[in-house]
Length: 376
Image (spheres, rainbow, N blue to C red):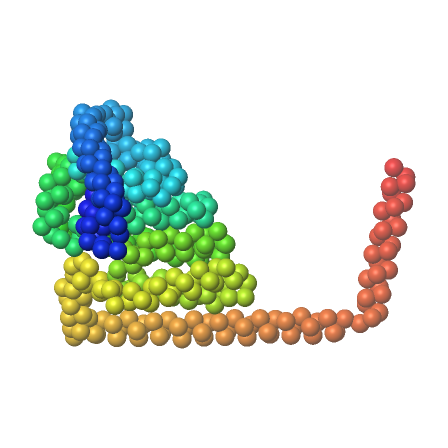
């Protein structure tokens, strides 16, 4: 509508056009604007009807008396999301948006946390079985999913508003199994723990891509590079994960340069784009809170005099054990050499005559046995 309004203004101010042609163009654009307004109203009415129907049916989508939340999410992924996300590019975006809608509407028995965890846990298996086009669409779906997660990760206020009290972000804390009154406590995931979980998901995605590159399989490497190209606007973000991917990409370029030039070209293209985004990477400490207290405590414990004495004693015992093993090994080798030399000497002492007598004795015994067999 705005575009057509601008066209009306441009046409009216164009002095080179004849007045009659100006009037026709302005009238045509005004008709299109009125039609667009009517269509917009009808789409709004349809949108409200669809949302009302989804709101009335949301509690039966994942409801099942015999299945847990994990089972419901697994069936939802297998039957609905994974298959449709590979049909077309628009279907890939639709799947990601529909999951956001399920979270926003707080569908019964739907766990957003479990959904995201399963998505990033099964990436390597899905990428392995994709065609080139399917991998491209699946990468688009992952990019849209990561975009939603990134919104919550960057803005604490937005996370508290949309996820802080959402049933999709409830996690279970299990009590001590050895105690008599062990209970499962359900709690909402706070913002800092969500940042920890985001880092875990990014690590899983990196691990899946590294697995594809280390497999040496043509389709896995090609699909992995295709997916990485599609999710580049949202991944990688953490510096050490980006460095791990960069190292594997460099290895792929070196190995495939003369063997499979198409993979080499894909790796070169992704490497160039990754380098262009280098200034956007952040350290892991900025991505989520990293505990440093345990490291300082362990360092102080290691630097104490008692710990130093204990380490010295352990090193001394280890050195003594190594020297004793070496001495024992040398003794065994010496005994083995003496035994072999003794056997060789005995063989040399045996005369040819003795050997001939032994042969004759064996021949006579063989003749006696043959005669006995004939008599029988």
